[in-house]
Image 1 (tube, rainbow, N blue to C red):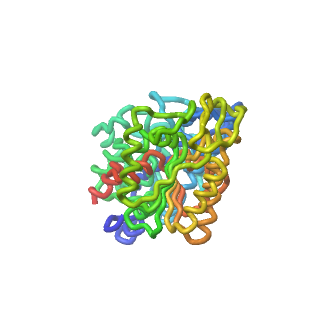
Image 2: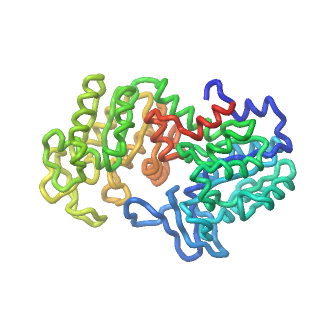
Image 3: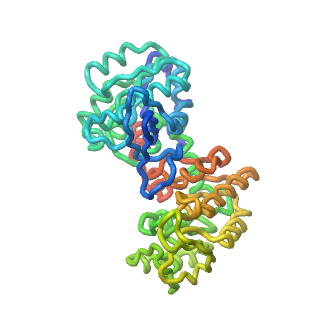
Length: 433
């Protein structure tokens, strides 16, 4: 954010009292209890409905609907409270889930209720996000009052970044604040289009913090600098691995992507997940690391299972000796000890992606150990950054999110940031200044 307008610097230049401040927040991932059941949609099966910030979330709502996971709401509180204290007329805009038009189960009303509780004052709610009625309600706000707009994705024009829709949103604003890092990688009307139409723009506190950690850690790390990259597929992490090889001193590979690397080395991997089309790339990445003097660390032992199931038979074997019909689902204990030893002297650590199928308790030990290790290293002065939906879910599950330097609220956005890409939502507010 160097050289760019921040919320505090903006407030020192202009009086925000009675200004209509349109604040794009990211409340997606908020979950509801309907009084009947709670439903999370994940890429892998889960055994319990843990209160994690999972996205997309689609749940039935009834008259007793209540927010059960307010992680994203709490993350936006510093910016909202600051604007309220400055006497702004605060207009909050967010999306929730992936609606196809107006979807009753994805309305923002329960969010307004929970936000009112957290702020200790009423948050008004309007069942639309553009139009004459909305404009009237915005104008009727008094200094320091907050209005939450309806789910902006009820309009297909939002994701299309339609200029006419962005213009309707802009009519609600004297000042535009983007505090939605989780959607900063999307060029949508409420994240990019509106910023071009409102004269005064800046980043909110959450956005500023995300950029400071994610950009700062990669561009100016305190060394030794390590990255832990996990997850199921090499194909989804190619760019971030290539980028990090040019930045880090140590690169630890975990998760399902390990087995593509092991097979590329000529080892048998049983029925473990392998991307055959990326074997040559895995070899290339290993060569790149060697050329750059980066220590590439792969598991020495793994926990294997006879099927992909929570009740599978399991055992620990050397990573290079996985028998036919068995699949690797987690790091083994010796690998965990090795990783802990490699991280011990590191001053900056970025973690993106779990070490195993942590959704199944039997295969969660490797991921849990990484979370605990990072918490310990943070207490000793290391800068630890967690980015990526599953990694964040893992540290939340372990109850360690507040023990780390920074836990990113953006899954795709944090990944693209680590890849070195320009995020449209960030570029829009910077270009407008």
